[in-house]
Image 1 (cartoon, rainbow, N blue to C red):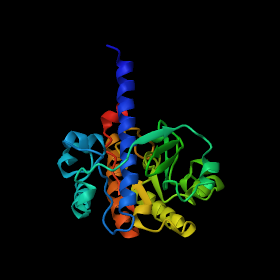
Image 2: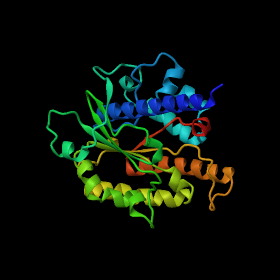
Image 3: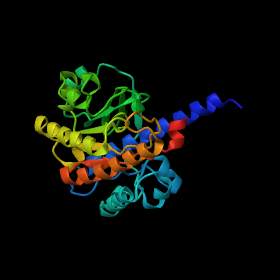
Image 4: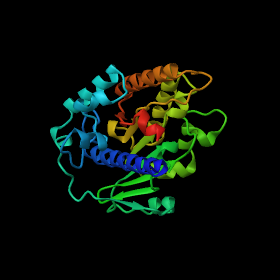
Length: 278
């Protein structure tokens, strides 16, 4: 049996599922940008719980399969119950076909964008998004993807791996100025080397920084942060899997609290240890 092909196929399927999650994020974010409801994702189609899981939908019936704390689980359940019904009843978006673009001339195309073009979102991610295409194009939106291996919320030694510093850089500032929303898929590199309470302090500062510098990114749906998924790569600060897992769970709980207090959206990625091992 060729295990290398199985590993590749598993990774490819996982990446497609993650792209589906980002797709749903952008469609839902546009739909609720003027509402006060908790952020949720909508499926393009959902016939059963398996489809919901594969498309990254947070749903009460699938929580038993997720390695998250009870408090975080309760938060996601409440988000589903409080959202508008048409966001989770399986309605298929009209003309909502996703296509990929490999164009690397992002800055110039952004600066020359016309009002007739679909709204743009910016995805800033660590290496877990490195297999995403640089541009995800759909009829109703466009997603600019910027993956940076080793990216942390705060890095005092390398500003190129520091989210706070990058948000003030000219290259990313030009993108954010033209986007209607930003999604951060960041966390594992920070969670291995910093305690959860300290990371939350850093995040609070970063949220304030974004809103101070970008007047159009003020509402709940404009800024979204993903939860941190399981990590078994131990560190000096967290030398055991149990201590690291505890920090991950604590971070997700505190991130939930911060999202309510600072009024931004929280996005759950249903990534398991099995995904990471493959």
